[in-house]
Image 1 (cartoon, one colour):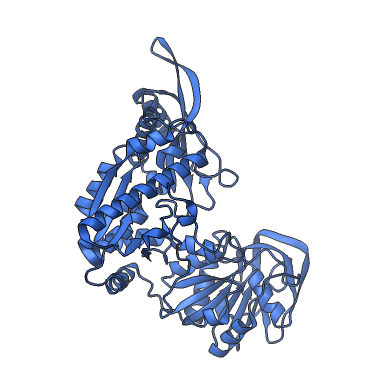
Image 2: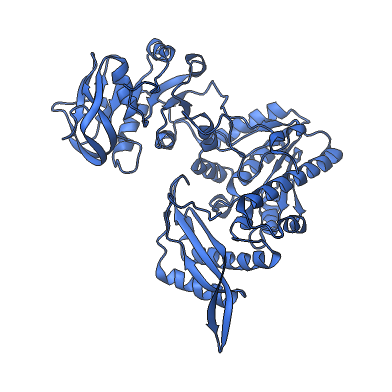
Length: 539
């Protein structure tokens, strides 16, 4: 199997400097990605940068506005992150509107002579914000005199910097919103981007659209046409592209985009590792090859994977075996495609914008994007140039793009499925028998979610087969069979998730069907843990 150090590096920066954008400077807040999502929801294009971004890098872009995020530090402490002096000069020279949120407001105040210090009381949770008497700030246009916002801070502003004035406060802090109209700068101590701030979207829209004048032209159908033209120019009239697909929404949308751009010169590969859902490879072939006209080949490698997984129980070893074997098989198929069609210089990769954010965020975990969960790293020896059509998009935008491309709704709104497949939903050893048991149980659960109208309300749903057996009674006989567990979560970003409150009657139907129809399971449980502290997957 390929060594990890040989994997092809993935890109971690967006490269379109011509598109006007709102730049969000991330100070390490858990909410930074939410700011970007809220701006995108207005059909306004934005990108997220580390707060330490240089003026040279930021200056390459046409900036409509700049937003400073929150963060866990105190601005007055040694080692706290600060916007580079050159970036402040850039903002000043271009007269770019600026909004500081939480730490971002404190950074704005600190730099321009205000006083930030610990408050007598920390403020976490919902707070009633009152506008200053006579306040007509454009930031609060259309809002009532008092409104609820989400606070999360220990420090607060004690003195407003010169040229600024307070426009709102709370019972705990006099300066929770400040502005300097002539310099086009605003600061908010609260978080308008979170769902706990009901009118937060209105404030952000006032800033982004009304104050900054950002055009609301970030539309997926336009993006598709733009990308198709870019790919045609990049690949040329004779170039070929290869890519792995899984049948999930990301790889389906990416494959359809490439097919619309270059037709049969895009070569898609589906590897059946023996741990897919029931009849999955046939369904993917029909959906992608027959319905979407993608040039797709399927490699049936169930026996190869299952033989390598024999006796393996450690989840990380399972992942490595499946990932490494996938890479070997993909490279074998790439060699066959090149022998048949000529050189393939390009690789389709399904990177999404949250992966990019993870790689460039302040004090992020890594300078390069994590290995893609569905595709896996690919050997650098393949010397392929990456094409990443989804790298500017959030998951909801990928779905919107899929609908714009005419992909059927069922495919577009499928739940995520892990790269290792059912292997990490079978706790303990993976065998052909246990895979079949889980496939049948999972198929019933998904079918019942569709029937009851709950599937689209759930972020992810699946069944886990436990390495546990229990006593049961069926008919006149005693049974001693496997225990399975249903996991359903509601989430928007998959970074946090709550268990889904599935009605008892739906659970009852699932339990009855699974236990009666699936030979090998005699007890069905329901997982009621949230993320954190639990994870969505069990392994």
